[in-house]
Image 1 (tube, rainbow, N blue to C red):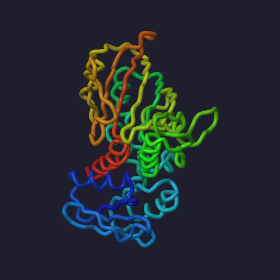
Image 2 (image 1 turned 180 degrees about the vertical axis):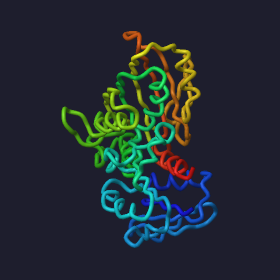
Image 3 (image 1 turned 90 degrees about the horizontal axis):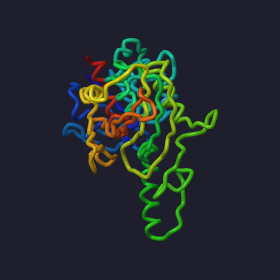
Length: 328
């Protein structure tokens, strides 16, 4: 089988190459595609050097499955053209809420792949790790409402945002004046309660995505409200979640369900350090669940803390898992 990656030289594109390196998919040829500026660069894949080719001249009929990791503007222009000749798994937000496009988390709703029309959308990074945890709990106890606050790493905003965190940190330590280009305020030694543009009722697009993507993937009857915050962390998103169920639950049983759920790992000791932080989740395929406890104000609710590498399960890993499901 031939595969292709559009945006192969970006953060998510490079991670996709790394994950495919370890995937069990039998790959005959891997085509790496990027902008004209990046064409000609070489990337090593399975001990072979592959030359990056320009998107403007690439023939989409060369690959059976094509990963798009190049942003919404590129996806809007090129995915419909590509889908005439290849199955597209798109990382951008552009197609996620279209009714005829499956929005897929591999462990949660892979059955929706049956209805794809050569375009499959990868959900928002913060949505993916949350629904991974919500799915088994919804099946057992039926979720009524979710309140989530996110603590999202700068890598979710791209390479330039990561560079800005590093440069601002040096400037602050060096006593220099800080300038912000990629964020609305200083990100070094600070947090910003604002991700993506503002929409109606004072919410941001990132919050809107978490609410509506969760409904599309999990259940339209689940109520979700979100507050999304950018924090000065390089990689891995964290989320504090309050989940209210319709049915009664047993906490030990609930923990046992999560510990056996695909893609999840429970690390929940009530001692100093008995939980997972972003730096420990970086580079790991698992979504970690900690601080699991009853909500003392609501007998049918719990609080928990989840952390996941946003460039892996939140992006590249999930797209490769979708491809693996398609191959099956």
